[in-house]
Length: 585
Image 1 (tube, one colour):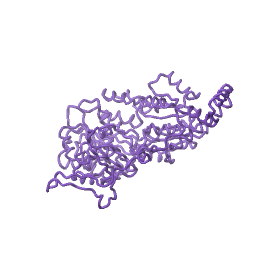
Image 2 (cartoon, helix red, strand yellow; image 1 turned 90 degrees about the horizontal axis):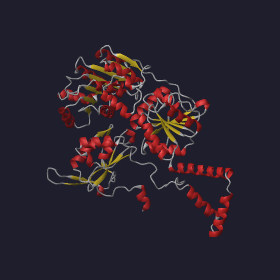
Image 3 (cartoon, rainbow, N blue to C red; image 1 turned 30 degrees about the vertical axis):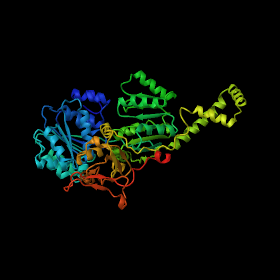
Image 4 (cartoon, rainbow, N blue to C red; image 1 turned 90 degrees about the vertical axis):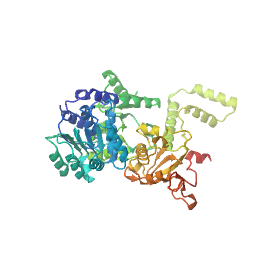
């Protein structure tokens, strides 16, 4: 089966449970690497795949390997090697999602910095798949705690990155410790000779796949990206819609479900919007496109497949709400604007962990994508005011106002109100539902980072109402790509703190703030200072005493001579107040 002939996931011989997940998440068609990798992997062939970061490689190997899994064997059958702990977590989460309808399935992420005892307990209970960094996998093999006798497949993900980080010898040693009859899949953005040497030595007649990205983009398109931070993506999109001069807009998302959900949310915020996806009838799709052309619709939220071949001249903006799978998809998306020599705007939303895909797009297109700042509340107020003035001028020119002029004269005479005061009151009533002035006292951009994994965001707040917290500073922030789930996982695993005892987490530019129990043992505090997250040591300290005076230094209370029962409490000042509290005082 070739990439050109394949049109849907339904054509692939995946397990029914896997097809069910694909339908639930709303995937329409496989990406090029998925289309060409899944059939040979289902057949048990070795595979050598070259494709850029962010092309959907995880699904390319996870979907077929999960379809061939023997759930009765609670021993590792799939081993995925990744260069970083962040990628190990990302891959294990994706595999867990794809396998959610496989009864009893277990996947274990294994990486340095995580509690070894926790990993040992889970391995003892039994797992079907292990995703880990080469160093920690080697540790388990040396200890004899990872049994690979039933291993069916090894996946080397981002092999060139493992080479660059110095893991290639560890990878080769791990491959020597795996069964000779195992299946091997290797994915890499580039193919250095060392990577090819490993492929030739450890793979049997591999199927070779090379995905080349198209590199042509339109010169009339201004390309920008927004680093997802602070605000939720929906709020960021709303600000862009409010502040920029937009004629027509295409918003691209990855799944059919997302087209409907995002469209409904934008409609509820007062925008003229409709979804466009492969589940819609042809008549409804044509009606939606016609509405975008004639101006009865301003925004269409679409998937890549549904927007294929779409040519609407009034599209001034393309928003990549979800980053595309590959550079070819990106080029196709932004090509919907900048038509017929007109200037177009393309904006890409990029989460911290997607920065590599941004770099891949820039390399493939050979064009820079500049960072953008979201419009401020003042920008939005100014834009609303300008539009309001335009509406006044238009109404003056086009409407018969004689009745209303008499009404105002009568009111002024009856109540003795000045025309300026009266006009201001009428303007207030006209803009009441959408105020021209936005509350400037509010924080312009929320400090709390968006949490994509709701498991951690909910658990971090599910604490007893009588729990007393102290706020701490940790030296890892947005610039390091950290997310709340990374902080929760590290604290829970390394310091033996229950995740339900972790309060609010605020991700800032180069550090973060986290609320932990006020009576936290001093031994736990010392342990947390040494913990690493996203390549950064936490170096935890009281948030309000980063540069304490002698009187403000942290106080320790001893319970026994051995040090048991010691508690750590931040001394000195109260936690910093919010901007709203400061202004009220």
